[in-house]
Length: 339
Image 1: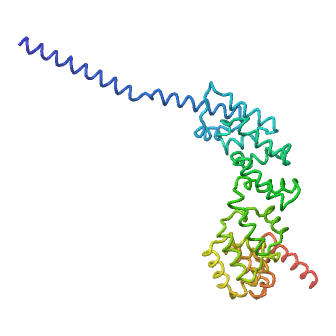
Image 2 (image 1 turned 180 degrees about the vertical axis):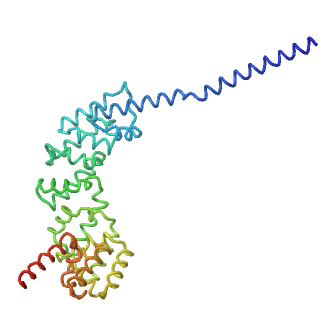
Image 3 (image 1 turned 60 degrees about the vertical axis):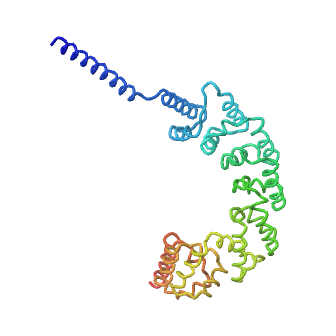
């Protein structure tokens, strides 16, 4: 009996000890691991630095902190970058925009990475506020090599645009040009357009006002040029610049779909092509826009659909903001004269 009681006590003791060990393990499992706690602390520091030193909002700082890891005891490089930016007239807004788009700039070396590119841009006309405006609008410029990317870009632009002032204007409008490979993307398209008869001054206009057109894949440009020539739109004509822009904005299927839609409202395909050659942006209008405008001309002004072919640009005008108000004014004059 005494032996059984002693064994029972021993068993209870073992069970109790086991339960205590299990509870301890479960409690430990509920605690966040040390590494996570450290990571959370690191994120908190990054957010604080991005808000207080770089001017980001709390929401932006939190988002950027997931792409950027700063070390509290190794802030010399980020602080050097910020000082360098401010020495080139970057204000808080420019700095915040730049870091939101390219957080890793805070890890850049000033002397070996930033300075050569900044010096090149300053030497080529980007002085004062122009420099931060350019870089903040497209931070990819900072990843472009000076000799293989930036210099060829400026040389090509200079050959068409001439003065540094015109180059600055073009790049303010399309800063992304600086981050593209000119030999691989831009130059073949420009050479094709000139070979086909497009005037140099129109190529310059294309670079200044419609730079994205130049950046399409070369086979796509070849297709657009040949398609337009087959329609009777020659590269040497003034309208070609606008026609190629519209052609490149539409896929083959969307082009065909737009043609079929306009045919459904009463125009023949030949008439559509005539209208396109007069006003290429007709085919850039949405179907809803064309339908609404045509409804106004046919049902309110009592015009025949084909009458609009002579002035297809009217279909691009806003019915509510332009056409109807003017019609109402003219109707008012007619009523007054009649009375």
